[in-house]
Image (cartoon, rainbow, N blue to C red):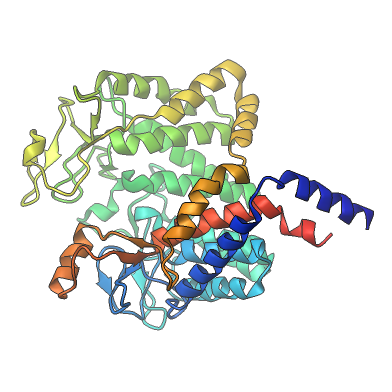
Length: 452
């Protein structure tokens, strides 16, 4: 009784500045949004977006049948993780059941090798090919890890290991890289060693996590081998960053889609630099820091006059290079490039630069401790303005709406729908619901405190 009283006093004192009314509104809004998105759980999972009348649903990039589910985040695995979080924070097992149903649906479309496709029908034929593109397989793995940690069930650990074994199987034995898809198809860019959309970075990060959680050294060894592949593929003098994809045999920058010419990519290299920091912290191997000074110097030397960087720089010349929409032909004037693609941006490995400099100043262990402290959840009071906005923007039906992207607008126009009409998206749900959960958790403290 004394421990419970002390815990209650500490919790009340810590959160005394939080508005009781806002906490109630946050939970009410959250539960309404959870109920709304639960109504869209079909065959165990979710799509990526819906029209407001819910007649049409999008998957990875196109409209899909309502019986299908999308794996690519922020769809099924991300939404299911929100339900798990809600089960913990609100101490409500009904929300965990939605996550369990999603787990079963994901395992129903897992390939025989252990990976995941962009999307599929859990009641249809099992897909044959999995993808690392857009965090698809690794996003599913993160949810399976989260679910296993929630249940502590041996069957859920086996599900996690099945994906871990897939990551090991899909790794190229000779180079240590990963293709975009597995099994890779000959004569397609799916066979290339792929940094695009952080494919390799996501796989290595997943392996480091699996090693930490299970202690299985195979995961660590595969991560190190992947890191050595990164070192090997860094460009030579004057080109010291990385390409979006490499031919797996020639190990040279290669074509992907017809508007993505062989080149070095300032955008994708940011994630690579960050991964080198993570590899060093996870292994203590100094060789993973060695590429960073050269990469940082490249960024300093190749900033455009407008202060940005081109996404792609031509092999051999390091001129900014762009892609045409109509054919696989590079152009050098951004005005001639395919529209709807981020050809220039403020891509710079600022995080990796700060981390590298700090590691050199204080050492690996001290920096790791500093980073853990910096990653602590924010205090509740600092979240209140955003929480107010999120609660106010929830529709009476329980949706957070977002504008459609260009591809969605085109399909809406074809279906006779007003193309500027806001749509329901899992991205908006996950972001807004996640904020409310973080806020409520910070106000109330861990659920176990209330049960002492």
